[in-house]
Amino acid sequence: MRNGTQEFRDKAIKQNHPGFNHPLTFAPLQEKHTDLMMAAIWKSHPRLRNFIGWARYVRSWSNNDFSQFVQDHINDDAPNQHYVFMIGDEMVGLGSLLYAYDNYSVQVALWTVTGFEGKGIGKAIVDTLTYIAFNVWGYPVLYYEHDAQNSSSKKLPQKCGFKFSHSKNVEKFASQESGLWFSWKKERPKGLPDGIFQGRPIEEFTTP
Image (cartoon, one colour):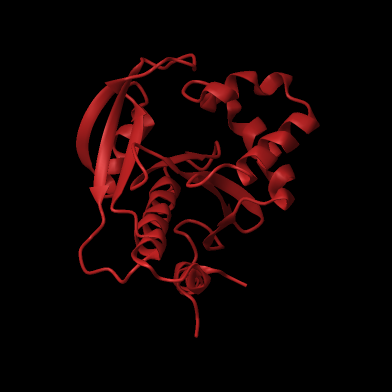
């Protein structure tokens, strides 16, 4: 029997991503992605450092620092999980599910590689992570959070069906952060098949 994750991937790669000659694919972040990640971060860091704290220091990173960055993400504590998104042989984005407020909620985090903004990739990443959170793991609640000043993130959660939940004050780490964050919320639709939290064996979602 085909497993749930493979069925989802097969559905996602049936057609090319709009405007490209290849489909948008994804895979869990692995060590083999280190060079791709290095190139993507170097290309994107002038934009990322505005709202992502770690990106402020990229100019001083060595090859070992990039390798450690990837390893830290691979070995991240549950429920944190990270996925590379590709079009052909090129990395176009990184998407993550991260701990939110309790053991029954996670949040979406993502960035797209410079040059691939405004091409529907961010929405595709959010939709993919939503599927993983709800259909695979069975989380009851998914959040999307962003700095109030981050104009590129303001419309995306609404396009993906999130509803405004609350705002919160946070410590500022990046150059253009305001310290005020908006939180958007999406609840797991009723009627979905059981996920891992509902008792479905994790092996059914493991891709060989």
